[in-house]
Image (cartoon, rainbow, N blue to C red; front, side):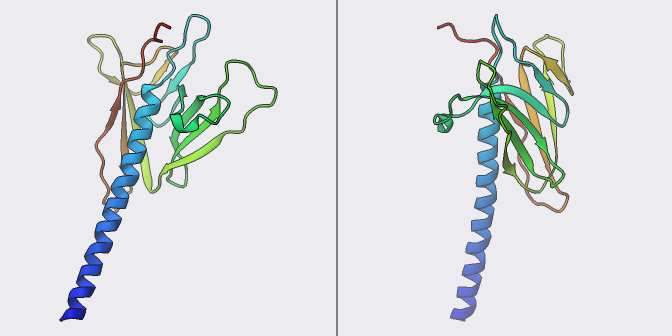
Length: 172
């Protein structure tokens, strides 16, 4: 009886560990995406950063998190996509305000694995506008919504990520 109880307890602990690990991975990806979108560069009078969004990819300029303080610049050109290996990828390159002598090599960071696809939509500031499937503009949308769809057999679910990009630079 003790052996069976111990075996059962170990199985429950293992399931709980994997469930918490999966939620932790999703929570980390959620926080990273929200932070990058909220710091989306709205451009300025001199330079305007293009935002190129489709239903499956999103490319924009943003500020990387504080953890990237060791880099020469925290400003980065990023692209969000799902690759052919079904990984949610954040592809980024530093984006200094001056042209570098040597082009930067893109860095790929895997945010999540076993992702079937993402569905991205954009909300305009126009009062009567709904969610749009594409966004090509130097001006950020009012909201960005990202739906992460996992493989059909994958039990993970996560609510849509909705984030509001910075619409103007602060004065200072």
